[in-house]
Length: 607
Ligand code: SF4
Image (cartoon, rainbow, N blue to C red; front, side, top):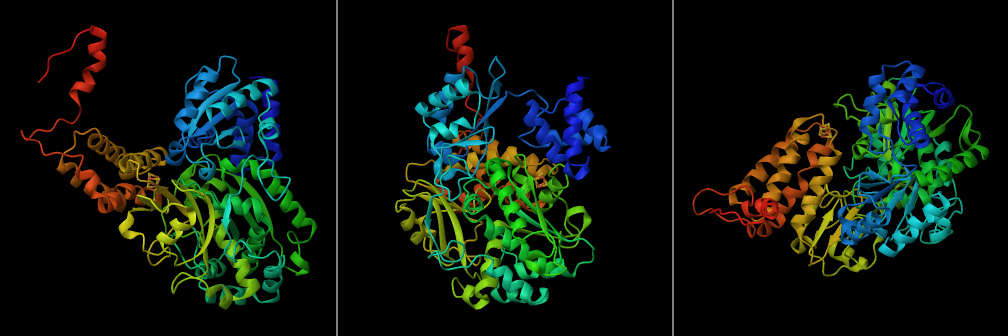
């Protein structure tokens, strides 16, 4: 074993005190330094943190951004979700392969660049986009790809891409990124309508003047519901966590928005990071927690240094650390936990495991995280937008917050709208806005279909455009994808099914194997060889996957199929035919023989 490598990895482990719980940080650092986490590296890490090597190995094999195989010094990961496809990622992909002389999944012969595909990177409003190591490149075109590769070869430094291709319109100079915010509509709760609307840390100041129980009462009165999509009452979650037994309690912010079409957390993290940290601090006070974790998705690593600087500034201002804001006995601090490319970690039990330095396998519930979460202690996991709402509620009062919205959905909702619309971006709208109104605002009056809530949500057509966005009717964590008249809806569905196949953790069979079978039925129908019975099979299989899967990922994974079968049934029916003979080929024989025919130089004879 190379002595230098051993010394370096020892140093990486020592920097986090050889703590088992920090294994994610260790493997990420090793991957970044050496382009892989090799067998030797796994051995050294396991020895340092005193665990079996298989635990390190299983972690490395789980996350998309980690690998045992040697990658190039630079990894280009081109996003290939449906929105990027709409905006021409296939053309961009071709440009990359031509320019680099390699295919996807390959590394240039000099070992410098590896080219890969990746699912959603949170840039659907500026697609096609890619990650170049931690640098985000947006609005790609063939021409831009050529210049980008040239720059990389010249400078050997991905950060130079930002200098050469431009810095986005971000409020802080510390965010060095090409990414733009695209805030299209401010709603007055998260994004203020006037600069003077909210005083900094006023919510926290008011909170610590109250008792923790009064803070939770205020949140309960506002009837704030979790903004991740499920809409669980936030005050109730805080109450459960506060009343659970355990000396240490933890506050975790889920900033792992991985649902294709979602990018609202990215904008909050860029524009209003102090608001988020203030919200976590209020939550800590209410629940009696001393430690918090901000779980940042690996795709947003470009924000890491910026967020670290915000935490430092808040420590200096005594807004974090011991005696926060001078309140004796109120101690709270936050660490950032980077993810490494796993959508399932958006599920709260999987996210907690990932924070503990393990594979992001979801756990059975109960016990719920509020009882036994991070390190078996009571833990409250909320998403970015929820914490931000809590600040405004403490600042302006529950009644003020509840003025906006509907009977069961108070306040506003941030929507990330993308796809076939004129103005993709962030819209803060009051709950209760209809889909039609929303489409008008985004410049998508001729939409054929809208995917509400990302692939795990539902696909609706014009007949449903007068329904309202709110928990009582159309619930969403924020992702809204618009598809125009020219879009093949079955192709969209197929793309979503691919996403779930890719992201399933593989623990349960209905989710792991069921989605693969769904995909086969879809392919059969799309190729023109499907029959009516296949539609019933899709329906039945979808129902099984929904009910027999262990976590939210599996339970929602058949939604693209099930909701389009319901709302766009005629599109399926138009592509299936009843077999006259009673026998329906499950594949296209003529197409299957084409390659052989070209090799042997003659057409084969078949019925
Ligand atoms: Fe894993 Fe899917 Fe089962 Fe969830 S439903 S635990 S993602 S296999």
